Image (tube, rainbow over all chains, first blue to last red; front, side, top):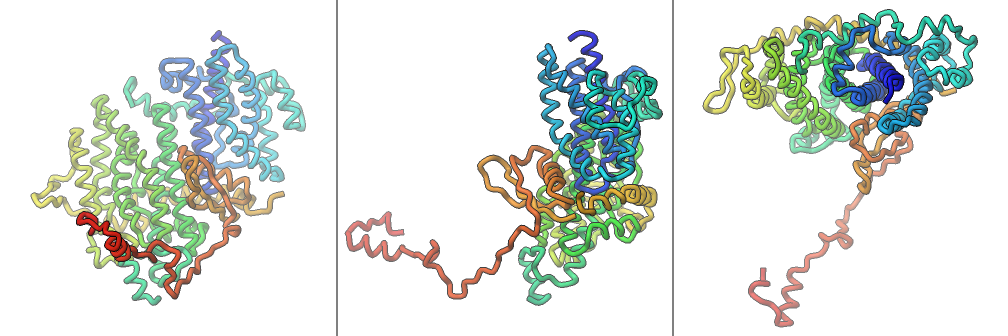
Length: 216
Length: 297
Length: 97
């Protein structure tokens, strides 16, 4: 695995880790009990995907997941934004993220590295439920103004998260009113983090940092 | 069938289904009892979910999320049973959030450290499972049936709790201290958990065979199973009077029953805050339920 | 929102059993919710999800006259068998139980 592919994988793992974190914030307080259970499974899958990728990249997945300083995470702003208790933005992000993620997984499944291609295929199969769930909610919410506004608002973040090669496909699918400018995309580029990221990282690593090097 | 015949029927082990005739008192007590269980599962989620975000390894994060997910799932199963008995879910949630209905004492208390995470999953869940196993024989069949699924799912919760505790006990002095401090703090609510020692014959819920185990019997079972587990790790139970007599009965300092009554009637350290949190979450997502209720486009 | 009954097959080959119910706004949601509530732990090979109103209940089974001619408990052959063996001379001590 070469440097650029490692970086790309790390970015995907960090996206899944942080999105899984954000999605798991709904556990216990989702709009309906049945949805709470279903949504929690999606959050767990995302963290599971992150873990699988970290395990490919390192002997110590937990160290990779937790022990970097906040500026070294490669997560996109899209996944870092805190939306609870806003269900419209939450679903908009799920729909947009799944669309972009499906495309980048397809690229990974064609990797020369068999371990990478194999893992991507496994993740892709697990994503089937996520995509079905996202589409189900998109159908239900597509006449809701606040949902449509959320999709518009988060589209630039989605392009900044996606592979540049996939931009045209995403624009064709979501038909935004205006095409996000390069300046906007720069503002949301990987390496820049959303407001509240450092606070999220601090809370995420609080127990782990309390007794450094300990087993939990 | 009249009420006396019904009473004899359930006391002889007879099973009741949702559509069967039942005395009004049986239905009312059943709803209240089962509803409190559902409320407890839903409220128990709140102290635990705070730690999902702070879990120190990926495995712990996943396990804790799955555990809390199970508890929400249990509340779904339970409220469905209550709804089929005649009280809609919406009304149950309204009554919970307004303080009109109750939930178990342990979920009114704060969590302070990762030590609590282990101790809750290990000991609080253990206390609950003892009651839940007894409910497998409940005269009301739909409730007894969901208890099977609930008990099956709880089996990993205890292992997860034990795993967290054992890892910390095998760790640093600081970690061991976290566990001991949590055990010390949770002991009084744990001793109150199964309720005051009302004789089973005087307990209407036992008379109707909704519950098949008296409060004191459950508590003795808990002590028998878990005091040895606690002590074998070198942990201390903060009750100097706690000892097992020659006849097998555990003696202990009488729990503060006034405290229990005060807590479950809504005056626990975290009661107001948690109910408010639930109320606000519900309000913020009310529009979503409205959309779900509307006809699909 | 309506109630959907969920039937669960624990593994391939065994019967589907009633497992519980979910509340959902339509079939798509009902399937998605049943999928996780009754299958997230790999505990089911398959589910059947059915709107409650589609389930027809049948429970008035009457047998006032004790019909046992079509059941095993309607047949007691011990005495007749002993008589037949006696007649054939094939009764032995060990057989007479």
